[in-house]
Image 1 (cartoon, rainbow, N blue to C red):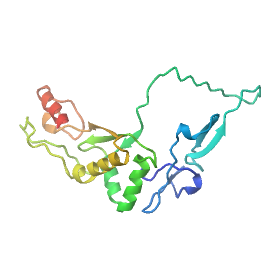
Image 2 (image 1 turned 60 degrees about the vertical axis):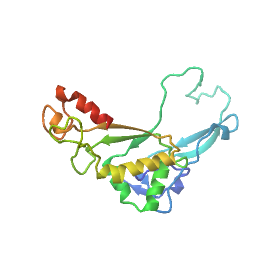
Image 3 (image 1 turned 45 degrees about the horizontal axis):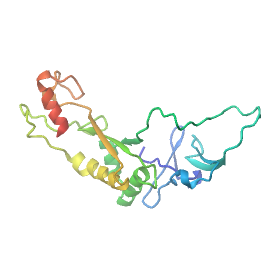
Image 4 (image 1 turned 30 degrees about the vertical axis):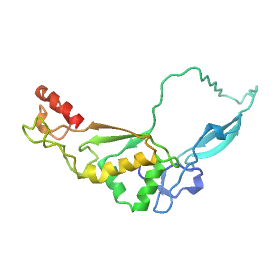
Length: 222
């Protein structure tokens, strides 16, 4: 996922092929971008058309004209836009900042890191507005860890973030916020629970003993 970015034309893309399709590669000096789709930049009666497919296109952009309805028998689709009727609201789009994502970003050169983050979060790129990040370790971590698993520590005096947070995820999250002008919303969720407060020991998420409900709530607040 780290290699994919949005394009204005398919020819700009430096392609890396997988089994059935390709990703567009960023490097230290170049990363594909996309012109923001702003309604005011379009003349009346026109619309923007974007195409992506398996073989050729990645957000290939064209400008088309709305045409008056005809009796052409080949016309099979009709769209009616009624802006007075609103249904579900889309809050935004985004991705995940996991340990593996942050570690892979860290393996890039500083210029490549910057271009990659810009392609996801700035107005020059996809303008993601949501990031999900795990609370402690997940299945995208290279080791198992939690933030406080000291037996008997009900006040969480031993709670602390780890190197994956302080040196990797948090700096990239802060840079994403800067690139988006503060538009990013971050939410987090646990993939596992400290063994000491679970009914059954193990490295996966499991039922919490009732006596530790408050400790678990405080863990979230920390």
